[in-house]
Image 1 (cartoon, rainbow, N blue to C red):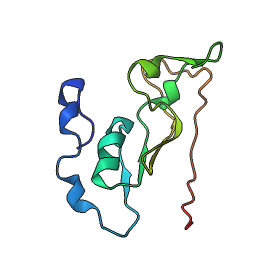
Image 2: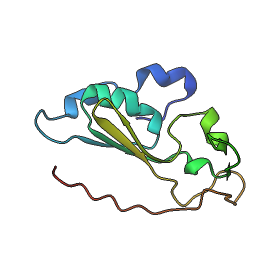
Image 3: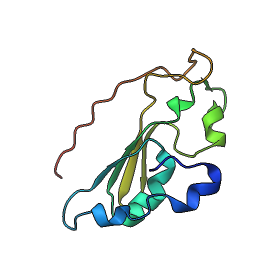
Length: 116
Protein backbone atom coordinates (compact mmCIF):
# COMPACT_ATOMS: atom_id res chain seq x y z
CA UNK A 1 0.00 0.00 0.00
CA UNK A 2 1.53 3.33 -1.03
CA UNK A 3 -1.08 5.84 0.10
CA UNK A 4 -0.24 6.64 3.70
CA UNK A 5 -1.09 9.64 5.81
CA UNK A 6 1.59 12.16 6.76
CA UNK A 7 2.32 10.27 10.00
CA UNK A 8 2.92 7.03 8.07
CA UNK A 9 5.30 8.38 5.40
CA UNK A 10 8.32 6.68 6.96
CA UNK A 11 6.89 3.28 6.03
CA UNK A 12 6.49 3.77 2.27
CA UNK A 13 6.95 0.62 0.19
CA UNK A 14 8.05 -1.74 2.96
CA UNK A 15 9.41 -4.89 1.30
CA UNK A 16 8.84 -3.60 -2.25
CA UNK A 17 12.58 -3.78 -2.97
CA UNK A 18 12.16 -7.58 -3.14
CA UNK A 19 10.06 -7.12 -6.28
CA UNK A 20 12.81 -5.44 -8.30
CA UNK A 21 14.93 -7.43 -10.76
CA UNK A 22 18.61 -6.57 -11.18
CA UNK A 23 19.46 -5.84 -14.82
CA UNK A 24 15.83 -5.12 -15.73
CA UNK A 25 13.98 -1.82 -15.96
CA UNK A 26 11.82 -1.72 -12.85
CA UNK A 27 8.61 0.32 -13.08
CA UNK A 28 6.38 1.15 -10.11
CA UNK A 29 2.76 2.25 -10.55
CA UNK A 30 1.82 4.28 -7.48
CA UNK A 31 -1.18 6.42 -6.59
CA UNK A 32 0.95 8.86 -4.59
CA UNK A 33 4.10 10.40 -6.13
CA UNK A 34 5.63 11.00 -2.68
CA UNK A 35 6.93 7.41 -2.77
CA UNK A 36 9.42 8.42 -5.48
CA UNK A 37 12.51 9.01 -3.26
CA UNK A 38 12.01 5.63 -1.56
CA UNK A 39 11.22 3.85 -4.84
CA UNK A 40 14.36 5.18 -6.52
CA UNK A 41 16.51 3.98 -3.60
CA UNK A 42 14.87 0.56 -3.83
CA UNK A 43 15.83 0.17 -7.50
CA UNK A 44 12.78 1.40 -9.38
CA UNK A 45 13.98 3.39 -12.39
CA UNK A 46 10.51 4.76 -13.19
CA UNK A 47 7.55 5.56 -10.96
CA UNK A 48 4.21 6.48 -12.55
CA UNK A 49 1.79 8.31 -10.27
CA UNK A 50 -1.16 10.66 -10.04
CA UNK A 51 -2.94 11.82 -6.85
CA UNK A 52 -2.30 15.57 -7.19
CA UNK A 53 -4.65 16.35 -10.13
CA UNK A 54 -1.87 18.71 -11.23
CA UNK A 55 -2.92 21.01 -8.44
CA UNK A 56 -6.40 21.33 -10.00
CA UNK A 57 -6.10 25.12 -9.63
CA UNK A 58 -2.83 26.57 -10.94
CA UNK A 59 -2.15 30.25 -11.50
CA UNK A 60 0.90 31.27 -13.55
CA UNK A 61 1.73 34.70 -12.14
CA UNK A 62 5.03 33.96 -10.46
CA UNK A 63 7.52 31.13 -10.62
CA UNK A 64 7.00 28.60 -9.18
CA UNK A 65 3.34 28.58 -10.11
CA UNK A 66 0.81 29.34 -7.41
CA UNK A 67 -0.52 25.87 -6.89
CA UNK A 68 -2.14 24.41 -3.77
CA UNK A 69 -0.61 20.96 -4.40
CA UNK A 70 2.91 22.42 -3.95
CA UNK A 71 2.15 22.77 -0.23
CA UNK A 72 1.74 18.99 -0.02
CA UNK A 73 4.31 17.59 -2.44
CA UNK A 74 7.16 18.68 -4.71
CA UNK A 75 5.81 16.29 -7.39
CA UNK A 76 2.73 18.05 -8.78
CA UNK A 77 2.60 17.19 -12.50
CA UNK A 78 4.98 16.10 -15.23
CA UNK A 79 8.38 14.43 -15.21
CA UNK A 80 10.89 14.69 -12.37
CA UNK A 81 14.36 13.09 -12.29
CA UNK A 82 16.64 12.17 -9.42
CA UNK A 83 19.74 10.00 -9.16
CA UNK A 84 19.15 8.08 -12.41
CA UNK A 85 15.45 7.50 -11.71
CA UNK A 86 12.31 9.35 -12.79
CA UNK A 87 8.73 9.87 -11.68
CA UNK A 88 5.94 10.89 -14.03
CA UNK A 89 2.92 12.49 -12.36
CA UNK A 90 -0.27 12.70 -14.40
CA UNK A 91 -2.89 15.39 -13.79
CA UNK A 92 -5.50 12.74 -14.53
CA UNK A 93 -9.13 13.49 -15.31
CA UNK A 94 -10.70 13.83 -11.86
CA UNK A 95 -11.17 16.61 -9.35
CA UNK A 96 -11.19 16.96 -5.57
CA UNK A 97 -14.05 18.74 -3.76
CA UNK A 98 -14.92 21.36 -6.41
CA UNK A 99 -15.74 19.89 -9.83
CA UNK A 100 -13.60 22.48 -11.62
CA UNK A 101 -10.04 22.98 -12.89
CA UNK A 102 -8.14 26.17 -13.60
CA UNK A 103 -4.73 26.15 -15.31
CA UNK A 104 -4.39 22.38 -14.81
CA UNK A 105 -6.52 20.81 -17.55
CA UNK A 106 -7.35 17.11 -17.30
CA UNK A 107 -5.10 14.74 -19.21
CA UNK A 108 -4.78 11.14 -20.27
CA UNK A 109 -1.15 10.22 -20.90
CA UNK A 110 0.56 7.87 -23.28
CA UNK A 111 4.08 6.99 -22.13
CA UNK A 112 6.38 5.32 -24.62
CA UNK A 113 9.31 3.48 -23.04
CA UNK A 114 12.26 3.09 -25.38
CA UNK A 115 15.67 1.51 -25.14
CA UNK A 116 18.52 3.98 -25.16
